[in-house]
Length: 304
Image (cartoon, rainbow, N blue to C red; front, side):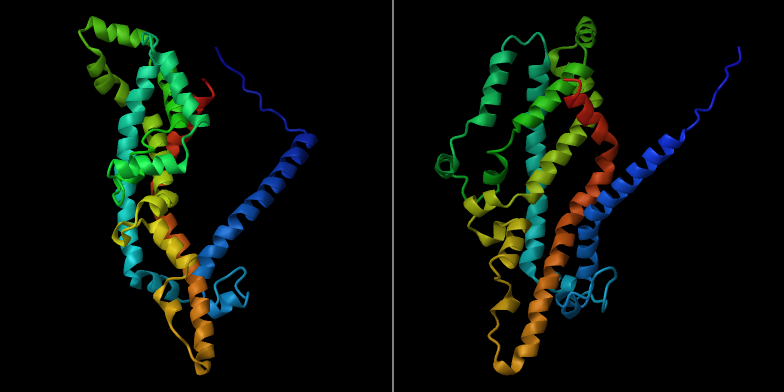
């Protein structure tokens, strides 16, 4: 039986509507994209020209001085390494806690799932505060260790709820019953069946937790006093906000006003270089989890 395909004719109103929407979205895209573009071209432009406001659409006086000065600073590279370790360690702990908890609370045969879920939800609205948390971390001997950055927030209730909904809508109870008939217990069912089917939500959790650890600096500011343990974001804050970079500590005479202006401009350009460098890991990771992003979020939130 032949099927007839009739092409839908677009009316003039449809064309006008699509054109207007395209123009509006393009305008919004330019508003969002230009600051990012400006950061990139400013990081490779002459610092004097950047300070003078001459860098608008294209780089002026191409130079790598900003990146060179950043990589000359050993504390920045050490902070980069520390952030990588903290991010990987923290994300692994987050997954080890969040995924089993979410799966257990998603099963209908778990009688305590409702009170435990309510207990977790209460923590989203009630908190002991910064001082009690600091006292607990101090008394448990976690001060000046990376554990103080990864253990207190090892479970995000929001991520747990999203993952729980994912398991509830993706892993049917009938699959568990069929596995039990074949002699599969709860642990084997979780390891050999549930985890392989949970790639989408696992990728989303990795992205959420990883970006959170990478961008965090406040916890390190409170709990880490040893400079050699500082993450990258705390080093960047130290350079950009507190102005402790070695270049800014130089005492300049009157005859060095021009050099002072150049150094101040270079310091401003370093800010753009530091933004690019600190964003590289996230930009590298995101394309690999992008294909799971919509699937994981939509199944974990909308269907719930």
